[in-house]
Image (cartoon, rainbow, N blue to C red):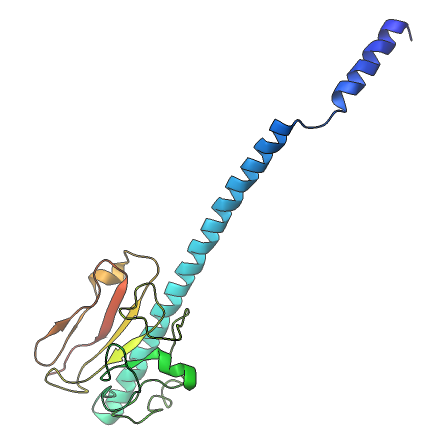
Length: 199
């Protein structure tokens, strides 16, 4: 190999073996950071959607249990009279009470009334240790079936979703026995579901 070829080979080797520049490394790190942010955001959205799906499914199961209770007893569990709830007031039951036991819906103070139809009442996937009223973004499930012209003849369940607006927001709301229409939500993800008065 002549001198010129040797010099070229040595020069070529030195150039190709020097590695990445600082700018190239910073660009790669920036791209990885952007991609990881996108992945984390997608995972968080998937988690909140899964929690919302669980909320809706469990509230609908609770509504089936309440209908079975009504068929057997002629009224829905009456929330006033001793659920132990303080929020939004003592006439309500809320899922925070489940933290000290599995049953939080009472009938005039009597606990464990739904167990023949449902082993435990649902709690919010992000169950708070204190009531979250109104339950925007979840945290607590509320139950009310008292007054308004017919205690136990109608009821409402109020809970919150993390992803909104949601199609349920345009379909929810309950009419009490005196004609009062109750709808705690709006465009904030708070959903009011239940049974209208049968009168």
